[in-house]
Length: 369
Ligand code: G6P
Image (cartoon, rainbow, N blue to C red; front, side, top):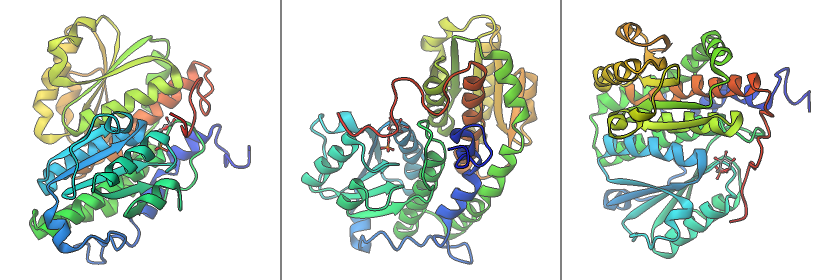
């Protein structure tokens, strides 16, 4: 087992560090040389079927569900098709409104999660076309879906999912851009711009990994906290949910993610002196609003660590500490933003002496209901 860890103390840390490579692997061959076209030969929908899609439903569990939430924001923004995201165990029992004009996207690392598989079957029974995003070749989900986009994350051993999530995001970006290209919902120049940024994202992921020291220090300082909050808006909110799940899973610290605009409707009552608040402020169009939200929690003496894109230095005036992520198109920020959150959960867990790779009560793949 030590050999398999490749010199890292835990599988989770190894897998976090594999992300630049597996992101690149998942992109390989799927963007044209000129960077102007998405090539998704694995999608066998006819142009007519693509034009006929009226609604998209993404369904999944756990971390894969959180990837789906990012998917909703990007598909709606780039393709202008309404997207619902549903937890697989809810979807299958809620008599969902699905028909042949619905595209159902099932996301599952293992491809064996019982609820996700049942949701896939339910969707097909109702006549939907199902695209699977999965990491395991010939898994049950892969075998039963109409189309498969494989993530090339390689085996993920740690129960807490990291590289599977970032490669699921890559697959969702490719799918969104592919649909945008086929439905002509984005100017060619915009597609090329995002694709070129996507091609470069793995080198930026490496830069984020190279800057782990401040996260480690934050974890050392706050690992005894019992409650933490993650706040963000838009795509940052979707990533905040994943960051809070990571922390809960492996450090057993209570963590809640809130849409920052919703703080004033309740959560603000829980913000007390020194409570760690992780504020995600990478979205340019929402940056000013996030700065106001950080001020709100600082006024209650929270300890704020903010994540912002390089250049957005105004955040230093309001947060206690800032981690910068390399500049990229704001739509792609989640791939980079989640990395410091994974590292934060990891170091918090290590500082608390938890079993990082095998958290209590949790399994890597839940094949029973
Ligand atoms: C379990 C794992 C999670 C994972 C979820 C869905 O709960 O502990 O890390 O996100 O299952 O798994 P899947 O294989 O369907 O992505």
